[in-house]
Length: 160
Image 1: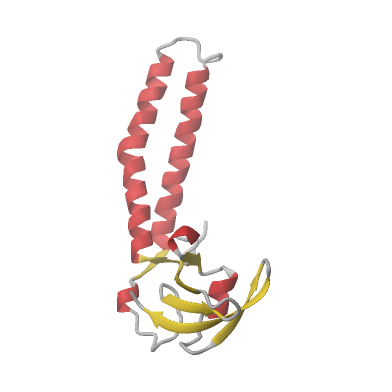
Image 2 (image 1 turned 90 degrees about the vertical axis):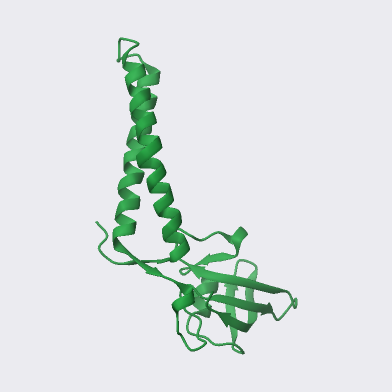
């Protein structure tokens, strides 16, 4: 069992709580009903519906246990309450400029479970987040990207 704390943004914790509620109130009942229905068909040794329902039950119960564990060890961080004096920290949003292309991009540094590049949320363990942590606006960082090293200037650090 993992006893270390897991950083999560306030938003990320809400997503996990919502999923947990859905699993406990809807999915669990649905699986129990499916098992009950499959049992009513008789011989369980050759009952694919029963096997599928039991497999689904194992997945749902496993996910419930995983979410409960994550939430119980979570250190929930609300970016709006951070006072990192302009430093890039977990949960901060960083505005960057790619020094080669001039392209501007913003990323929020989040926990592993929240990372979603489509939403510009990068995991705290990603190369770009590791390069940014501890830096300030005006700093230039080098990130090892799959296409080779890239340099970014930090334009602004926000706690939103």
